[in-house]
Image (tube, rainbow, N blue to C red; front, side):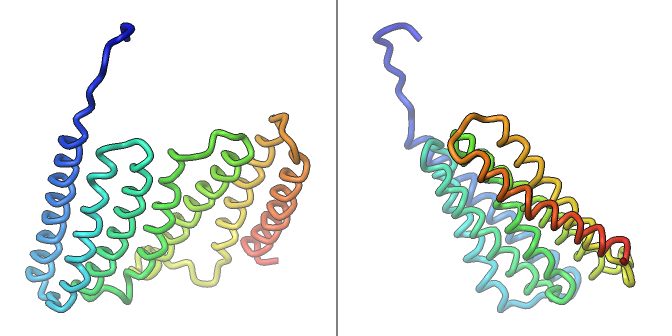
Length: 213
């Protein structure tokens, strides 16, 4: 950029577009869920008192996300909180809480994993953040498996299938421990030990459950 050139950012325009996008998406999602509930004969009108506030809360995160910068993280948190409330309203509206409860595991885990963009620059903080994000993805996979079970898509009765997720989580933690070992930072050995020790134990326990020992 040439010296002396001033770049003007239209923050008001960004905020306005964020509001329009957020409210538009919320209205579309609310209308879709309501129409689906009515079409399938599962309409529970009182669930609208959860559904609509969730959509509005999620929309409130749109302007902050659109403006970017330090406000984007706050907007992301607000949008995710609204999405969780909206998901609860959807399950209540459709009467699917009995089979859809694993969604309440999947969405929070995905929300945490989505914060990876805001990871700290310091190797130790970044490594720990990456560990939490990968564990959250593992948790989302666990929730998805629960959802497949509750909906009858798969039948894993009599198996130690959860051991596979314990092993997957252990691999994620151990991989980040190895990565931390590459950096010349204070307390590197302690950090690697704190991550690698429980990871090895979790992997062996997961293998035990999976193999049925």
